[in-house]
Image (cartoon, rainbow, N blue to C red; front, side, top):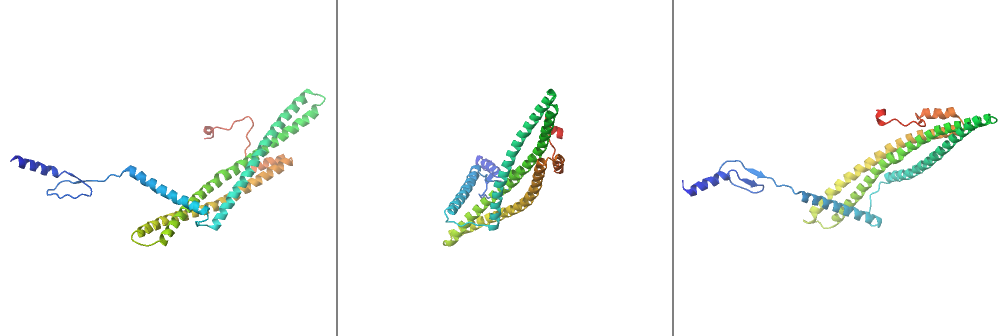
Length: 296
């Protein structure tokens, strides 16, 4: 074969294994494997697109918030739900005040019990060393020790009350308020895209604006569904929170009342019975709580 024919034969054989980029067309005269190279996505472009969408959404929401504060924009309001949210926030502040006062009472009672215990020990010591006042010092020692014991029992009831109310306020109610914040953010987004769609619908309809209107309608519908879902979630959480709150506070208020009444009436038996009723175990002075491994 001549050199030109040999070269042509080699080019023909190599052409059957060529890689053809996607989107291009190639006509093959001979059969052979053809590999189409996929276009790789650029991560930088994807991140840039996400940043662009986030910036646009932030701009729309900020504009909606400013417009509402200036009294120029309209906002969607669920009167019944908004009233329940306002009541919840107001109640949370009042429960926080009760919690703060109860903690103050617990601190003061602890100091008083500590003083009574020391006073009882001092009277007991003098009872042993003062023979002429043995009985008098002994009575006072017994009285102070009894008061200290009853005070420790009352302190256990108050601390149990504080722990339960703290869980209700700072965990249960706070969790519901976090859902409320998400609902409020969804409401702002919904109103922002609703306003955009209304402005586009008021403008001219031509080949340039119709795609924008269609895209705006799609975004509006997506945020409307998100807003409806969050509103439903808040309604459900508020309902369950109210039921749980009534149950928890009912038990804790009964405990608080019975313990205080029994303590100041000097009814030691009733005071101890109150703690047993609510399954409250007092920590023995000088004994550390069991570790997690010991409990397991």
